[in-house]
Length: 218
Image 1 (cartoon, rainbow, N blue to C red):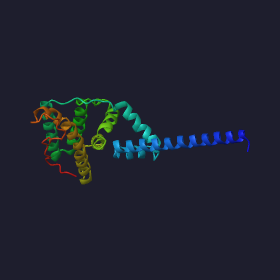
Image 2 (image 1 turned 135 degrees about the vertical axis):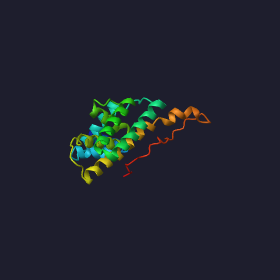
Image 3 (image 1 turned 180 degrees about the vertical axis):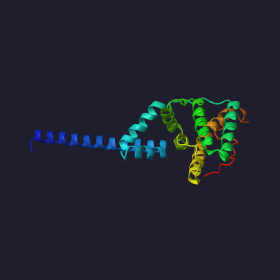
Image 4 (image 1 turned 90 degrees about the vertical axis):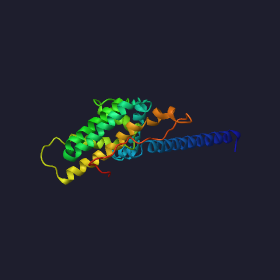
């Protein structure tokens, strides 16, 4: 074999090896990005895939865009008085559920939207943006808000409620409460950090003191 042929063979092998490494790297990066999105979004990842009819690439583009738009959002803290006010209003919502489930669900939807806006998320007038931002920062709880919002939109009737209707509203309210509590209590440790004996930042969440009345846990 001539020297020229040997050189050409070496070049071809090098090019093919480089191409193989590039493909492998892209696959690994794609797998890593997918794992990162699954880890970050949890159930929201599966919902996005279902929404895109099983197209994972389209779902991941959607979720990636959400992170780009809202990932750097910095929430605003609630002062103690505001936190107590929101907590008291949620208690009233739960009390209303006993006699008026429709009213309670509508109030819950409005209250969560208002609270999210107060914490620095897009305001209630931009529901889709608000829900996208919440999905980035509260992926494991945002479905409860989505569910109570959808249920509230369907409570405009005035006829008698069936047991199934009431159960659906109860479930929506219970799920929405998880996001409500996360938004209210999220910065509780921040507010109390300076009061700890050691002065160290205590990252444990504190109880909001919310006790359901007429609405049992699911």
